[in-house]
Length: 491
Image (cartoon, rainbow, N blue to C red; front, side):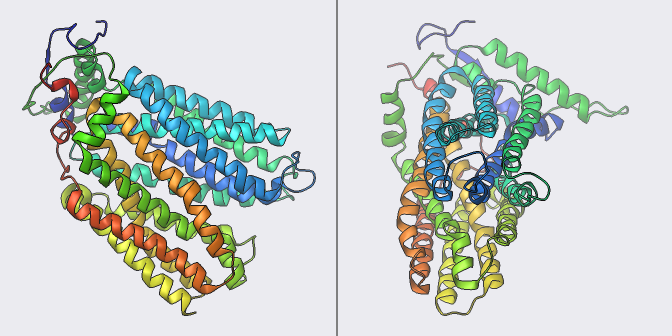
């Protein structure tokens, strides 16, 4: 059935959301998680590898005429800029043309750009394809978060989102350890090892692509755009697979009945003006919440990780060759947080968990700043403090992505994710370094402690904002959290 603007098609009554939400966890859901969620591992791998190979790229014989500061400065900024542009550009296309088309396209952009980065012959080529790699990754965030939330049953949505977003740090661990091997000149030549690190990212991406091609379009997107027959057929196929998996020779598994229906007026597109009015007027408090959560976590992470190696070098005489091991340790703390705490977001609830993880991580970073400034820490105990802080902060930061992906209407979901992601990424990748570079470069304990305190203060304020503005979205359907715009009465 062709799509059309609102009014061109008759209203559609559907039970697709209720049917998806009452499904038990199954192999089909694992396929969705692996096919879509593993992109965060790629992002973590990308960011960490580039930081670790900066010194090698600037060496004579690397194959590029580039300085270390250009890699960590200009190239990193271009990657961030690409991610922001990609999120907004592909986010709009995701809402308009569907989740599946865009999560296939954005992965293709990432794979192509990363492969071409590996064969860089000049600095301008390297910079160009770092931007295009970021473009693909930014688009992935919008397309993937919206698709996952619309395919995962409501009672599992919180923990699944948190663990998937937290898997960024698995990529960071892999990138840290991979760079140690790939940059070993006794194994690979100076101009070969760094290229292979990018090539391995392409290989991982191709494996993900093979799984992802089996992930269908979001049935929710289909019925909103008038393709209710396709949506029903798709959900019926999923139900058949789940029933077959859960049945035994002695007893056939029976799904519980879908308990609610939704009547919508199909429409082809929604203009930016209506999207803006919906997000920033109709859901003004939710927009404030999203901004607070994203800016808070962005500044906290920059307070800790910006100049990470320099802090260890300057204050604790840790060699450049050893900082990768320290980073792998705090990356592990980042991943364990969402893994351990994720289920509580679905049981204790969003409000208490979002606010407590933000406030706890902020307060713990204040304590770390005081201990650091007083000279009570060494490299190992500072890293241990960071691990504890980031155990809670990582769960909080992941919940920011969960929050903005579930509290706005279906028709605006991908673009809303893209907007808040872009704001957070810009704050973390632009404003954060500008503020913290000056503080961490002075060599004074008090200045670096102040950087910690700025991040801690913004994280704590974001947590207090969540106390009052967080939405109790646990175990609720997306449509009950934010009614689709297509459900609204005709004007």
